[in-house]
Length: 109
Image (cartoon, rainbow, N blue to C red; front, side):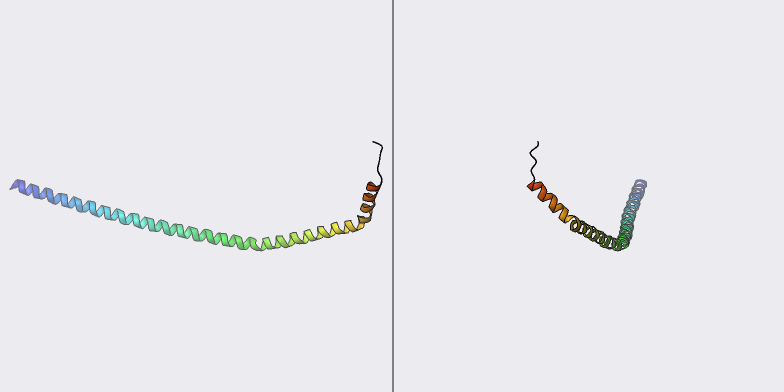
């Protein structure tokens, strides 16, 4: 009987150990799941924050880009006007030089 009692105690201890291991595994699984969910929430919050920062950056420099393009166009138009003005002023002189270069041949080489 003592052996049966000892065997019964051993089986009971084994069952308790299995319950403890099972509970530990369930707790571990729950902790992993909770950690994963928290990590996903942190990633989501970080992503939203970065997207917000990017939208603010784009808004900050969007007007600047449009202003830069309009200023660049104005400067380009001014430079083109200057070139046309110089061409109008020196056009006759350039034509005379070209005609002279074509009509007068230098044989002294």
